[in-house]
Length: 302
Image (cartoon, rainbow, N blue to C red):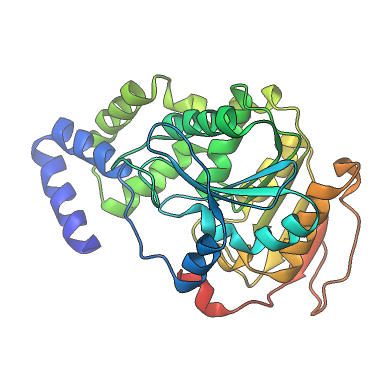
């Protein structure tokens, strides 16, 4: 399929860069839907639907201060389900949110700014947020939303990109979009997003976020390279929890990651969460903690 897409864009970009760019922008905004694995369906079955406006879907568990789980591109809130039981046991209400055009929410296309506004809509419906735990694209969007006024006592970003312009360059290479078509793609995205593409780099809005942050990233993340985690840690002056061997998705299920994130969310002073600990199976310690892989490799593909 990808090979066909690359041929189409290479050809179309050579004869009509404007059309190729507009079509590439549309493709960039259209997430694919993946079948929910059994573990997600079982988790949702023991939760309670959370009513949200605008066709948004969410499920909640427990009672207490709210922790919002935010998925990545083409993901679902229940992908972060490993955090549910520990946080419920700690006295929190956990809500897994499906972004627009994702999971059980309505829509077919979405941009980062639209996803960010949906987070604000969810927050208005469910009340104050004790924490946001977010993955991948959803982590970037959560930071964007926080810079635009979304209030959360603390934020955890896992496998987060730090720059949409860089993601666009990677997308351009992936689909073999000719360079002459790229300005047309960027223009189409800027028109829909309502802001220059350069403004979707965390460096441009880092000063507008004051919530304590924990950055979590794996050195073997093939989808969002580890350098994004180190950059975010440097930009925010925030602790970086480094893992190895977990990749982009299994990191969400690693017991030590879940424990460390839960500790950060529940800590009386989250700024003091950057202390050393030993991972049960070893691993080098960098800025904060470093954890070894302990989870099922099959989860990387879900």
